[in-house]
Every structure is written in structure tokens, then in C-alpha cells.
Length: 79
Figure 1 (cartoon, rainbow, N blue to C red):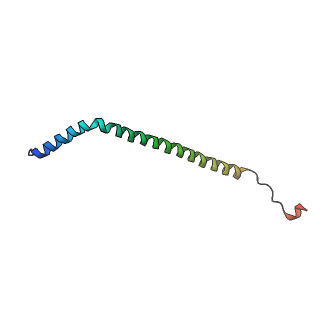
Figure 2 (cartoon, rainbow, N blue to C red):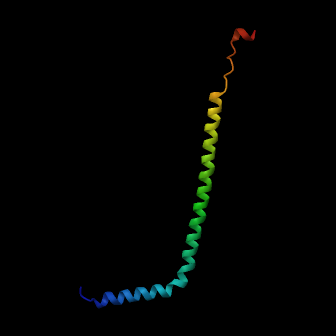
Figure 3 (cartoon, one colour):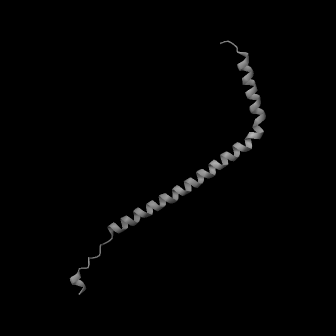
């Protein structure tokens, strides 16, 4: 492979720029990562509550399905 001086110089400039920009970019990246974790935690909490609501719904349905049914009241039985 041939040595290409412009590509080498561009690579050096990008590396030096990254090293020099890191102290300024780090707080921004840290804030973005923190916000992402807060969003993830809130989402997981909400999903947990929704899952619990669904489980409660089906538990109540199962309870009603297995409960004895009351006898229907006929008009003749009322009189």
C-alpha cells in the first residue's frame, strides 16, 4: 500500500482535535448518558406498574371465573 501524505495529515489532525476537544465534550456526553439512564429507569418503572396492573386484572378475572355464580332471580320468585 502506498503512503498517502494528505490522508496521514488528516488522520493526525483528527486525532489531535479529539484529544483537545475531549475536556469540552466530556460534560456534554456525560449529561446525555445520564439523561438516557434516567429515561430508561422511568420507562422500566412504568412498564413494571403496567405489568402489575395486567396481572391484577387477570387475577380478578380468574377469581370471578372460579367464584360460585348466584342464582338468577326470576320474576315469579320475586312475588
